[in-house]
Image (cartoon, helix red, strand yellow):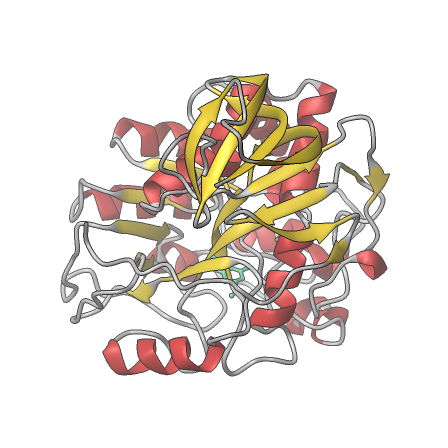
Length: 405
Ligand code: DOR
Ligand code: ZN
């Protein structure tokens, strides 16, 4: 048994405790070390971040990202668990394509990971859950709700509805037109559509506005927002680097979403890390949609907490606890029975985010110049993985088997 000593976030507040860990799992949170060897952790200690929505592009588009670079970025941004999306070059929709992907990324990850499948006519035992595309986005995938079979696991919904997207289609040349071409109504219609088919375990991804949040909550769905929809809007001079689906919205819509972050309608903040190369992003009309963000998600939200935009309990539930619960992994809490994934934070040490300092192969960020609070130390299952912005551990990231429990 090993004892970690520090100011841990337990039961809703920071407390001086010893956390006793054996085989990477927390056995006890205690007031004394019970005779174990003690390792001190500096600063305030939170559970490791859980990002339930990333696109690491592996295999098939390694020039944009692979599991080594994506997981390096995750770890250095305080995220120790990711759940990766199935819109790969070879879409993940059956056992064969799932195992092909799992084998291709084996041994590459620094952080623990689960893999989604596309909703289809076949269920994959080990998938985290099913991804539903109600409208086309990067990858051009469209889910036929009539034909799908469903597990009891999470269903992550890209809610923009195809019929609505087609009605509003134009060739956007800037962020304002991109917003107009994929309006809020398309998110609302998609949420209503999915409610005709599914009631349980529905998770509405990347909600951009408060109307869609309220509608999703009225159906009993869980909701997710991204740092880019919380912090960026169509008036900003970021051009195609802000092109994403669903789109960035007008300033008033963005500000209302941020204002509602801690009022009970948002369950999860995910990055929707969707890297594309700088070259692909250079021209608005041809640029693919997607924004990288796995490394900046936790630092940006820690900075929002420091500024008073979100409570401590709200921040931890949205970044760690709720995504872990929704994806059914023993993570996200510093409590007996959970994995010993920790991040140590100095709330007084923030720095300006710079694309060149980040580790995604994308090499750029729309959050250039924003304040971020990056972790001092990152532990995965009891082992030091990163310290002072450097990876110091091995690629021990484990596959989180989504077998129904
Ligand atoms: O902007 C987006 N990019 N939205 C998506 O739905 C997919 C993602 C990607 O894979 O690039
Ligand atoms: Zn996505």
